[in-house]
Amino acid sequence: MLFSYIQQFVPSRIEAENLLVSIFSRLASRLEAAFASSLSIYCWLQIEARKMILEQRGQQGSTVYPKESAEVKTYYSSLLEEASSEHQWVFREIFLNGRQREELAQQAGKDQAYIGDLLRECMLIIRKKLG
Image (cartoon, rainbow, N blue to C red):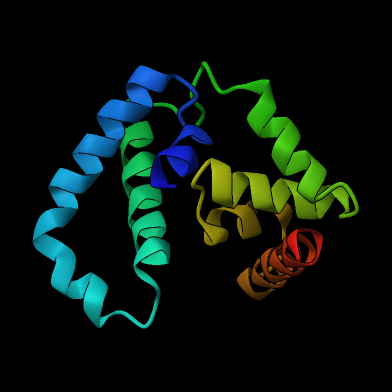
């Protein structure tokens, strides 16, 4: 399941496989934190994997993988097709590109709470769509 999750960010199978190995290698020493978390192990792994993916993107000097597949964009677009373009922008920038709320708030001329509300509304839309 985690491999499929990683492929949403890293469409190259070989890159995704290498990243999965790296993630498990780096997280092995932190299993106590996973067990102590109120999250399920899978949710904890997703969160930590996303952090590492975004970290890797930052090291490559890019917020978007050049090979980012159209399928991934289409998938997320379909989940938020009912949302406003502003909602879609906030979700894409925070979730897929790893930008900070502060940065988006400043760019949009809004406060961080407003951006947080938009992101929360996106999650509700996605939950409704998947439920």
